[in-house]
Image (cartoon, rainbow, N blue to C red; front, side):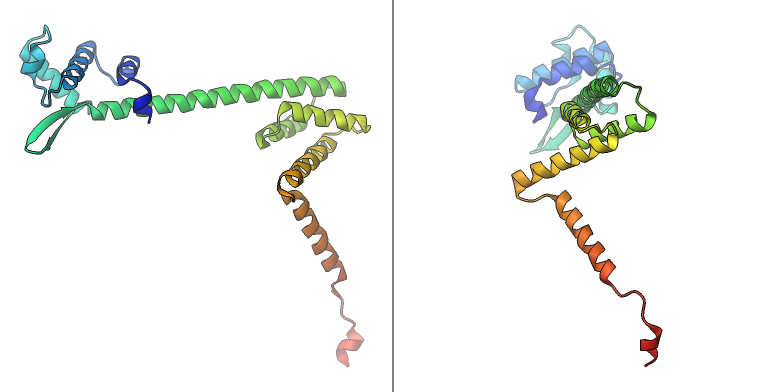
Length: 219
């Protein structure tokens, strides 16, 4: 659980401006949390005034604002009403998860761009020319499929060793490596099975008597 891994007070300090809370409201929330931690159930303006320098009327206005903003709540049960900060905590943890996802996405994007830069550099160096837009697009597809920059560059070197300088040759090598790895791990390859089925279908179609002899048809 995210809530168990990080203190909501840290998240509150980091995000209170985003939640449109002012410093008086922030201080009030911290005191509410402190009082709840001491075992107090219902937190009122009077009880907060004992810990704060603000007047009861001002604290009461702050509590009304926090309730309106969905930061605190009053829950009735077991013949008593309690003050809870759960609405605030849920919002903070949700913001934290979103920020983590965005950060991970940004990191992945940076890693992909670094891999692409490395691949482009190696291809242009080994081919001795600038890559075309179509070639760049194809390389990006390889990376999106999950091929590492090392694997793609090694496939290029193998293609060049065979005297082939096209990206189509590199593509075939990558596919053959995937098929080989599938066979080693699973005992079969979806790629090779698909290829075999296509060949079988081609042979079947080739053997089909599409043209019927009119003379035989009339007999």
